Length: 373
Image 1 (cartoon, helix red, strand yellow):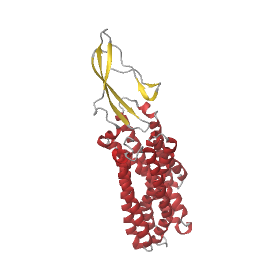
Image 2 (cartoon, rainbow, N blue to C red):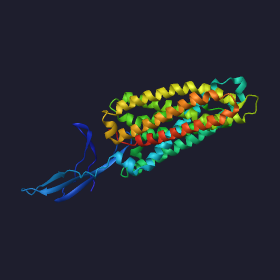
Image 3 (cartoon, one colour):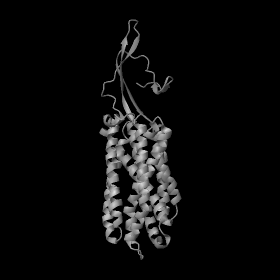
Image 4 (tube, rainbow, N blue to C red):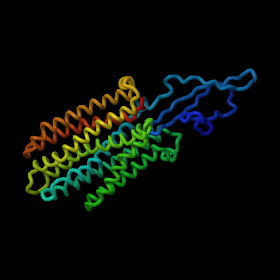
């Protein structure tokens, strides 16, 4: 049987009301429900009740409390059974970070290198960065489609149109459009060295859109939480994404550029330009992360008594390792970049830092799939 159309309760904006079909015979019934919040987190469960016959031979519904295990919240769903959703979120984070890194590398690293000594290098590095960006744009598009498939499977009774008309759906459509525009723009960069501005705008949209349909949008002070979340993603991408591009693209371009500049000197130049940016972005990551935690964690006790708090502590552990690895590279490896023989050790240590960053994004993917305390 189908309930009447849902309506918002006049006395409680967080409550939905529907009428039970008339003429129910005495007996036991269950209402099966599925819903999703602004952040797209699905939840479902049952409401059990009995219809009993009164002395006047009228039917009176009697609600029975739900069994404790019938209403599985988003935390249980995400961790225990939604591996695909977590993988989609990780792919979205990683692809977005790489795209931010590609744009940052083009404007804030290559753009600050001396034109006279690195023109050929800039062309090679720019084209290779665009190729990496195209792959990241495809990854972002694939992640968005996986999110949509997952949401549709979690909300089988909701039409695709209704899902896409929600706040979560509009955010996802923006992500899809931004990924397509970024991919096309970077294709033209690779072909004709034009399109960087379009790639920059599309990447900014791709980085900002998820925050309007995530935990930040569900926070009480969303007008503070959403900008904080956007900045957190952007500065994280400028730090870790740019490091990824330097390791994959920048060092390779330095080794392959056929001119008189030694590869070691060119890599050292890139690292000297990137280091202040990395330090600034690392500090901003900490500040915005703490700000988001203060807005989303109601009490200190929630850090070790809720799934969200425990995973947040795990994320902080990996972030601490990430900062330790970055400090090691900055203190010990950077001064050694005086000759070509230091490139391989630098690349290895930076790769270790990126492996820790992958773990951070994996933990973050689980974190954003959990229900707020």
